[in-house]
Amino acid sequence: MALIQARPSRGTLAFFGLVALGVLAARGWERHERTVERRDGPIAEDALRLTRCVVGPSAWSLLTGDNAPQVQELWAGRLAAQVRLLTTRPQAEGWFRRCAPLADRVARRLEDSPTAPEGSAGVARSLARLLSDRGATPERRLDVAEDESLARSLAALLVAVRAMSPGAEAHWDVYGRAATDLVAPVLPPLPRWRPLDPTWERPVLASADALSYRSARDGMVHRYEADGRSFRDVVVGPGVPWLEPPRDGAVRVETDDGPRMATATALLPFPDALRSGAGTFDGWSLEVSPSRRALLVQDGGTVTLYTGPSDGPFAWAPDRGARVGPAESVLAAVFAPEVTALGPGWRVSMLVPRLDDAALVQRLVRPDGTSLPEPVEPLRSPEVMTDAVDASAARISTCAAGDARYLIVLSEHALTTLRVEGRRIARASTTGVWPRDRAVGVQCDARRVLVGTDPTTARGGWYLTDFDERGVVPRLLEPLVPGPEARVQALTLHPDGVLATVSSRGSLRTFLQPRRGGAWTSQGMATLLEWPERFTLVLSRVSAQAEGARLTLLVEGVRNRTVWVPPAPGARPTPENPNANRPTARVESTAFAWLLGSSDGGRRFETL
Image (tube, rainbow, N blue to C red; front, side, top):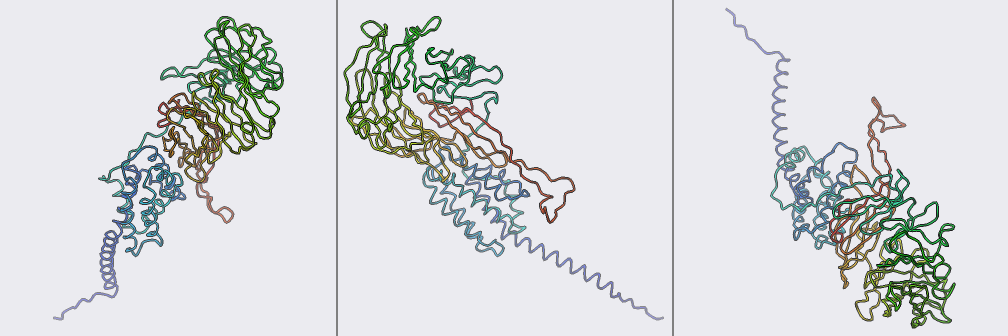
């Protein structure tokens, strides 16, 4: 009986050989993946730990959208916005510096990894230096936040680490959601935005507690007033507010019958002599005493005082007014209520040119409209003006607060501030240069005057005179301006010093200089000007009004919102349009106006 010997065919041998090779290859690849994961996974963990140390536990929510175009720019924008928010309030000591060792550890591991992208270790080293050197003080951290250097470097490092190997990506997804024992920075509440009603036209801040505007619905001037913690809307009368600073709480409005003054409760007419034409008289100021109203108007160098009762039907009596001082030669005038021998009257202080100097002339106006001269206080040149009396070369402004009245003279090379309180007169002078193409901005309180050009320059150009000190010289203010694109939008007097409202590329912030001088300190953030994937704000005007510790900002401009438009169904790339199958960005622009209020000197803001 013959034995049959079965031999596998060559195909069978090849099949089982391939299976064995596949098993060995799979096991080899699995070992390789474990090796790569053990080598690169900790790098991803350290990179995410570093991010959590800088921006807090919400870091993982910022690192989404990895399939979006330009993911590095997307992450950098989100991280920059988060760092700006965190720098608005004090953090634990050494917030930035405690993160530097994590960046150093990432750099060392990247240097030892063969799959690390070229230059990634250097990015980690620069991050460690930035966190250590520029995180020493809140002001230096603010610079880092505004120039976005930290956010951009961190985003570049994260993108490089995540893409370096499958092992890094595997640990990325797991560790990103894991709990952490790091001390997280304190995240302040996100700013809220509520635009003013688009039918509110020509908004003007009348005071820290009131906004005047014209309603497109009824054509009336309205006043939006604070009443405790709520606001009420009051109809004042027909007209359109002028875009100019208020005077003594009143806003000038234009009506079909000529200019009027919008007060808290009514529209007061200007005298008939001033209501013809466009009402382009040089200046006006309003005073209300317990028994009378008074309006001081300067037109063509002539000062006229109009009076009227404070109760009952309003009328200027007499309507022709009482001329005070010389005709056609008064440079500026201020007035204040004062009791005379005949009863309540007014003290008018006028700056009058003379042959080679200027003089402060005061007159008491009695209730019957007659005036009594007061002693003359000469102001010798060149303290007020250079080259004797050249009125065309000087700009003169006035301001009133409490019982104090101020006359501010800006000549070509000098600033002189006069403080008038009854018969008491104080003066302070300094030298300086002010651009002729910029308007003069003035703010004052009972003891201080803030003078500068409007709009402000990037580095200040404002002078503060404090009459609490004897022989004081006005000092130049140079606000803290973070980042190369920052700009001072407004300066405001505050009980503790001077507040500067500064816009940068990404935020609108307030800074305080103490009353006795010293370094500027960051108060807080009023609002974000950039938020990735949402909008960018382009400011056109920021108005500020302060009363005590209360600060109100009217922020106006254009909001640019980026909208990603999906490609058309079935679109395919072509040589002419290689991105036909990718989303495209479209910018939508809309005008906006926000009203922001702070009750603690610009530390915290709320939408009003």
